[in-house]
Image 1 (cartoon, one colour):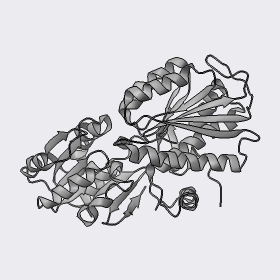
Image 2: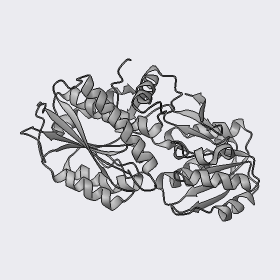
Image 3: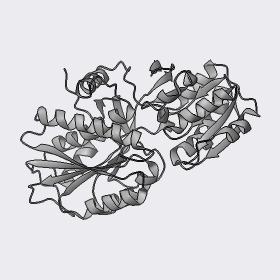
Image 4: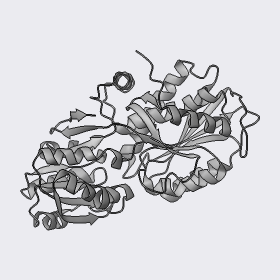
Length: 383
């Protein structure tokens, strides 16, 4: 199998360097390669967003195994130590603060949610530690030259949902969204309404709910009262399955669009009732890029035939992104990694998510359009 030496991740990964005399706060480019480079992961292993964090961690662990097996960094070995932010921004901030003051920490791969990432980004920037986020598509994540995002913001490829609505003849659209999630709020209040004129639809009703909401019958009734041709269900994780089930129970049989949070198996509980849910994504295991299929093959081999989702691909690319930066700079100090990352974002790379470029320190991918057919995710189109 051809190796995938490419980057991403949304776990908070902190690279710590063991056995390096120059490691630590305020260090400069050393050009030295320690015998061990430890990645410290801060991600959501438990809580409502564990579907993202646990899958991300699987991708990271696969990447680390490949990096070490290939001896990609010569005699240096990457180790992984991971922590659980459990969905709490305060917990994530405490863990990242611990990393910034440690003389061993070389770099951080950031948390999986915007709320956590907005809290920790200034901490890493102030400490001069490179931090690479995944997911975390909101404003306030990239706050300086040491902050990077290794997941393309959904807003940069969500126009594919507008194209789909147009192809289905949808002229009116209702939006049900999680108002506690900054990315979903931006998509629901700004991005989707902003596409309306271009793709020929009108937003007739919008209703926001909280993370804890599980009964959506009232907001669904409000949306259905506007008689929409389509509904955008923009909720967190398992909420999407609950909501689509209730939408169908209410008798709506029109077009449904959603977002990547409906992936990662989150629609499995609703089964056929969710058939037709369609969304743009930065990664699908059906993707045709050879590098994507190399990753899929390796992932299935490591995880008993399981198909990877976007969170796993992002974690995989994130870990490879740090390894590439170390390789490019020839060292593993904070400044070495920062220099390597600057080279990497200028050049781009090919990873699990396909051909990857950057706008500044912000990732860009072409994306694809997928649909839940009642039992699995299928590819409709890719750019």
